[in-house]
Image 1 (cartoon, rainbow, N blue to C red):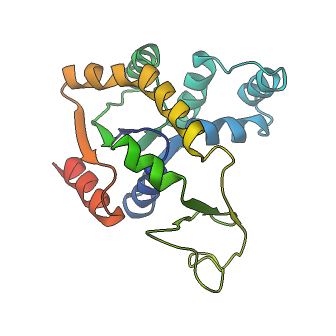
Image 2: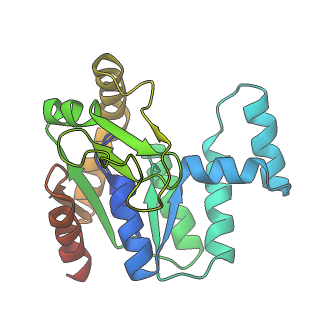
Length: 214
């Protein structure tokens, strides 16, 4: 089963994707992760990525599609989770063509719906474990008193420099400008499903599972 997780920065896509990887054997295809891995891979596509990034230029859609093609052709899984791609209608068309070419289907698009003000309040209070990426929040999941991650035991916690109100509102506006047309695009195809992205983690997880199991 192949799905797209849509949602603004901080909506929790990465957290939910990890559940699907661990519990359903799916593979998360995060654009950022793929680019970082490709850059140091030494492959022909990786060399292209390195050249573009070293030149300070934006990676083209063709390169990202090429990286996704490599994954579809070489990785065995119970399905793929597209996280951070597509972001535009052109990318959505390109992904659809690629999946068709590979004999794959897109089974569901799950939009993690949020209230912007509540999202900003949540994200400005979050910290991330430098060891494993586990996310903590000053209000809902504070860093343990012994300052050790409950997941991996590391004691290196970080806050993103751009996790502040002004930067977040700018990132949200950029997301809505570029990505909101995808909601109508996939709705018209009958693939769009919305879940409350600001619910408790287990509740969001259950809602996503209900969409997929249906």
